[in-house]
Structures are given as structure tokens and as C-alpha cells.
Image (cartoon, rainbow, N blue to C red; front, side, top):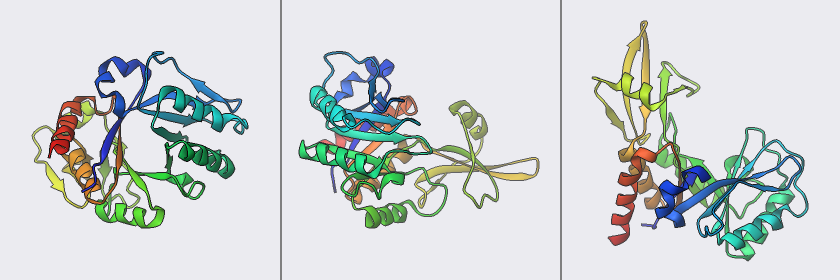
Length: 257
């Protein structure tokens, strides 16, 4: 099996809680500003290692120097690569993404891109969300591998309530408190195809199904990714803060074995 590395996406304010995992941190401190240049939130001057999360907002076209700005920051901070995050209406050009990909690869760094940009940077790694509500996760990931080549896991923590039937696969997101309230006293099952937990209930004569992830299901998704030869997975803080001991103790055990 491949040694799948799990990384934590974290805001600068959460750094004191996560510095023990510095090599696996993705710093959500960078964005493309309205003028098309690189903007940075405050980070400790001494911070080194980890990855850059670059958020694309609705902005003007990137400056000609933007790709070089990103590379320079990666070199200065010794980042292993860049994870691109975008709004629902992405605006980055194919030429910019290819330039950034080329610069990073020439300096032995990786670029991870959302699926919507997969055709624009063929040498980059495509992020695939594991929080699916239908089908089979293994087949879904294998199809993505066949289509894109290199993929990484976007290990989004699924907590969603579906009013049945749900042909579009769209549900209502739940907070942890709402999930616990709905779950109380109800039997919980594991869906092997979806690789997640679920339970059912009825409200106003309408059947509902709730899908949710916890440490067990996220570790199972990581295990599946490892089995399929996927090298990287990304978790979001504070979404999984309560699961960190379970997730990372398991990672350390896998390294030892």
C-alpha cells in the first residue's frame, strides 16, 4: 500500500493548537487579491514547512508576476507545494495555471487543483471530494484516477440530512449539535459503498436519511485511498478538531507497521 500523507488545512489563528503537526499543515493564509497579486495573512516569521493554501476570489486577472510571487513564498517558507481553493465561479486562466505548475515542478513542489481546473493543468494533482451521497466511493475514486491520473483526497467531513427520495443527492448540512440531537436513540449503520455512517428517521410522515462521518469512517476512507495508491489527503480544521487524536495516532501506527 502507498504511504498516504494526511494534511490539515488550518487558519493562522489555529496554529498554536496544531504546530506539533507542522510538516502536515496547509496554511490557509494566502489569497489572490482584487488586483491579481498575492496577499498574505499574518504568520509567525519563523514558520517553515507545510503547504500553502491559495484561495482564489473573484478578482482581476493575475499579475504577470503572481506565479513567481507564489513560488518565492514557497521557497522562503519551505512549503512542499500549493493547494488551490476557489469560489464557485473560478476565473484563473489555463496559461496562468500552466505557468504556476511549471515553476513549482521545476523546484520540486506540487500543485493540487480543484476538479473544475483539471483540464487546465494536466500535470497537477486533482482534488476529489470523498463526501459522496450516492454510488460507490471506490469506483468513484478509480474513475477519477482513470480520468485525471494523479488525484488526492478532499476528506470533507460529511454531516447531511436527506429528505427521501433525493434524486439529486442534495441534502441539508448539519452542525455537530444538530447531528447529535437527531442521532440520539437511533441505530446507526455503516454503508460500505459510501464509506460513511447513516441512520434514518421520519418527520411529518416524510422519511429522512442522515449521512455522517466520524473518525472511523474518515480512517476507512484514508485506508481506501492508501489501497488505491493515492499519496495525499486533506482534512479541514476546525471541522475535524475533535477527531485529531484518533486520526493522527492511527497515522503514526501505520508508519510503524
